[in-house]
Amino acid sequence: MRVPHSRWLASIATVLMPALLLPHGSASAQVTCEASDPGHLQGIAVEKGKAIYWSFTRELVKTDLQGKVLHRLPVKGHHGDATYHKGKVYVAVNFGSFNKPPGRADNWVYVYKAKDLSLAAKHKLPEVVHGAGGIACHKGRFVVVGGLPEGVEENTLYEYDKKLRFKKRHVIPSGYTKLGIQTVCYHGGYWWLGCYGRKLLKVDGKFRLVGTYDFECSVGIDSLSDSTFLIAHILKTQSGNAGAKVVLAKPNDAGALVVRDQAQQ
Image 1: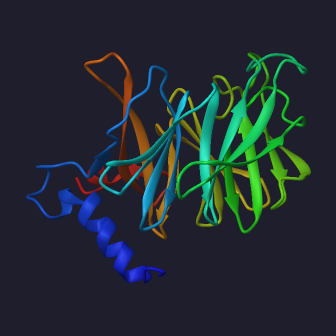
Image 2 (image 1 turned 180 degrees about the vertical axis):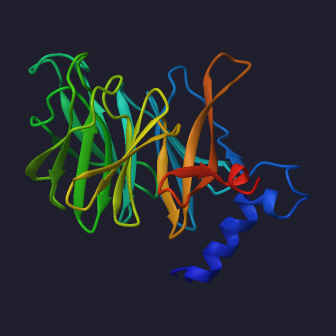
């Protein structure tokens, strides 16, 4: 049964917005994933009102909205950023090298059934030159992002149709970004691209760069509602593995993003 929009928004608000229910500044709105990984988190995907998918380097994890593990699947590295679309989780995968000259990468999109994380399909992406690291989808159009060698002053977004057939390259005059683009999502008419070094790129529907911001979302960004994003961060654990959490963010008047509790200060 499909959950009404108002009901799932109320549910996610209860889970993810404790700071709104407590005295000002006394809590942070966040959810921590129960799982951790010897590598680190590469990206997240949201199944609105139902689940969060956490793509670690060598493990794919499905949790409920409280971070409780529902399914987990060991995977071969390097699994990167992920996106949810119509009952499936799509992950950008590279079994070769990143940030190297052409011919060194071995790029794929692995498609998993959201219900139990069983593998549904694999699609090879020979077009991605420097290593496939992230993927997002909007209205049947997939965009894949990836690595970048030092000294290259532009990033490339790779566009695919709903069957992951290559359509077009889109070159973005971003300047050099460390190791390329790590994460991507679509929200509010824009593609949002997370890079290392606290850099967020914003690209419009015609793939024109419209903004560059100081914001950390290099290990996960996804749209939660019309006005809210989920942003992932890495957590240190006692075991030495890398854990993860997500926090809420929203656009500000300048068109950038700001973490939700910081926006209220």
